[in-house]
Picture (cartoon, rainbow, N blue to C red):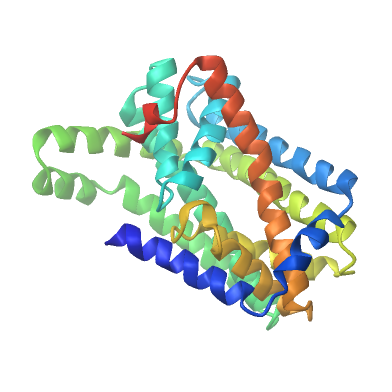
Amino acid sequence: MLFVARYLLIFLVLYYLFSDIDTTKLSDSLLSYSLVWVSIAMSSVLLSDLLLGFRWKYLSNFKCGLLASFESIVISGLLNFILPAKLGEISKIAYLKKVYRLRVSHGTHLLIFERLLDIAFLAILATYVVFDIFSNLNMYWYFSFIVMIVIFVSFLIKSQTINILINRLFTHSVAVFLMEVKSGLSGQLNISRIIVSTLYTLIIWASFFLTVYIFLNYATDFNLPFKAIFSVFVISSIAMSLPLTPGGVGVYQAGVVFSLGLFNIPQEEALVAGIALHLILLIPSFAAAVFVLESKRLSLSSFKG
């Protein structure tokens, strides 16, 4: 039932987006973008994947090499496009266990901490866009609020109350696994590791933004100011992060159309830009994932379980 609901949502979103669009002009519009700038934007996607690999390597205390980390990231991206609810993320753990013998509990805490970093950073960006760009939030209160959230989450992870709840709510084997995961998360929560992890995350999200900025500023003729491009990036990133459809199909384009509409870009032009941006984000990682799978003689079915 959930499977049907997800694909019904894709259909409804795409129908809404394309209902008033002359689809015969879409291919011509897509081909009108500068191939040079599109290629540069695609190159920045691979840079982002490489930076994600550096972060994963650091978070694993260098138990995962850069190559292994990069491989797991591009494969998870490919599976995220096929599987619903961002389940492709779990393939990072499966791949590193299968090929590089990484313990599942270790991979799980790395994945959780990585997701927490990205969710926190996206929340910060979203809050900034909503309150600073649109309503001039007092930045003192903004950063105070962020610091309070970080302190609360750190306290929660390190709290002994969590240990008691785990032991009471789960069977022994599950509790042992969850305690190992919690122990790994606690190990990430010291000042030096938080600072370095945050710097990695900042650089990664800057590289994500670079892709969108290159495309919207140089490949299109929208003539958007920097803050407008930043807003489009944040809103479309939120749309892409929602586990509603495989690969964010339809939802990502809706985010781009909505955000560009805030700056008076016509829906048809915004939709073409959204399709182009989605392809730019997907094609380089997909190509890298296929290369990795072929070189390792693996198939996608190896990770679906």
